[in-house]
Length: 74
Image 1 (cartoon, helix red, strand yellow):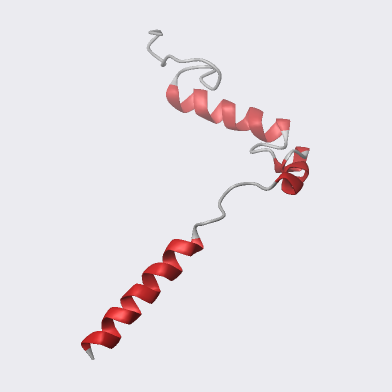
Image 2 (tube, rainbow, N blue to C red):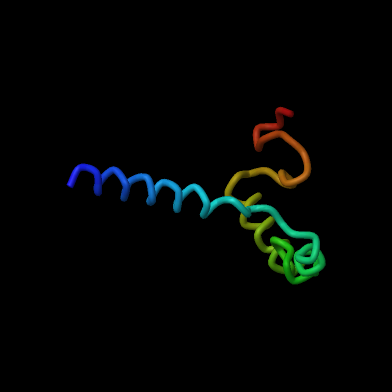
């Protein structure tokens, strides 16, 4: 029973290790990921609404392209 347990742990470890072996983007998939629909915010209206909510809650404007907080310090 001890040998079977060790073999099952080794097999499970190998299975888990090979599950993360291909996490990169293949060259033939890059054209699909470069489409407008695949952006994090594909709609400019949604992005502007998110910005409005962010600066309303944080008392700061911008914040996505430069550092600094609502207190005026950079």
